[in-house]
Amino acid sequence: MYQVAALLSLPQREVDQLISMANAQAQFQERYSSQSDYRRSGQSSATNALHTAYAALGLQADATPAEIKRRYRKLMSENHPDKLIAEGVPDELLRVGTERAQEITAAYEVIQESRGLK
Image (cartoon, rainbow, N blue to C red; front, top):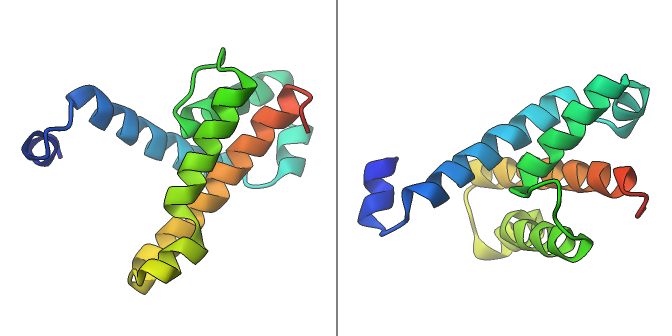
């Protein structure tokens, strides 16, 4: 992946962040697929869920509400199923985009709830 990134003139730091975000989104979806699971979890698990949610959006815990919303909207713009359908992506990529959109939304909701913004 780093060789491809180098050919595209992408800094390794950005590639690392993208990989980290994708891994966190997958972990978040597996562990905290529903808000009820998040609410029932203990303090340690809730803290871990929140940390994973920030990582899934590629943010730090000290991000402002405006930064969080901006990142959420950007990621949803890139992964929203309706947009992918309009672009004519193959069914497999549409399925992946739909899953990522769900993960992004779940992470955003956990952050919003933890901050009392929902």
